[in-house]
Length: 159
Image 1 (tube, rainbow, N blue to C red):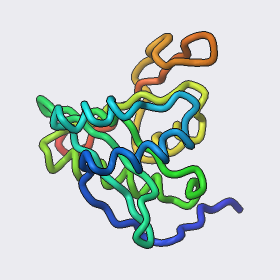
Image 2 (cartoon, helix red, strand yellow):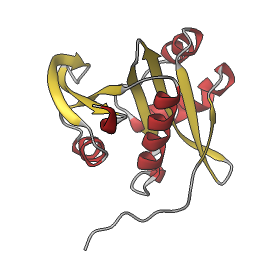
Image 3 (cartoon, helix red, strand yellow):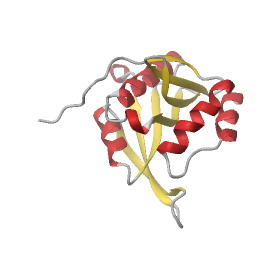
Image 4 (cartoon, rainbow, N blue to C red):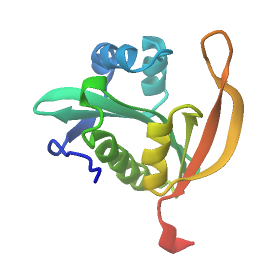
C-alpha cells in the first residue's frame, strides 16, 4: 500500500517583494531552469497573487497566480525539495483553488513539463484535465521541451 505521509498542516500568507530572496533560495534548489528574481518581482508588481506556504514557522513553498476575466493561471507552484512527498504540494494547490475562486475565477489553467510525472499526477488527482500541449514551451538542456496544458473547473456544479 502506498500513502502520502502528511507532516502537518501548512499556514499561508501573501507573498511580498521582501519574500523574493527567500523564494529564490527554494526556486534554484527545486528547478534546473528556475525563474529569476525579476520574474517574481514583475509578477508581484503586475498585481499577481503570490502565496507563501509555511510549516513550523519556516517558508517551505510558494505559488504565483494570475486572475483576469473569470480565469486563473497558476504560473508557479513549488515546495522545497526536502519537503516534497509530504502532501504539502496538495495543500498549497488547494489553497490556490480557494484564492482563485475568491478572486472570481471559474477555471484554473496551468502548464507542466511533459517529463514531470509527479506534478502531473498531483494535478490529475486534484481534478485537472489535460486540454493541450505547448511544443517547446520550457527551456531545456540544449533544446526546448514541451508543456502539457491542464485546466480545472473550480465550480463544477455550476456547469
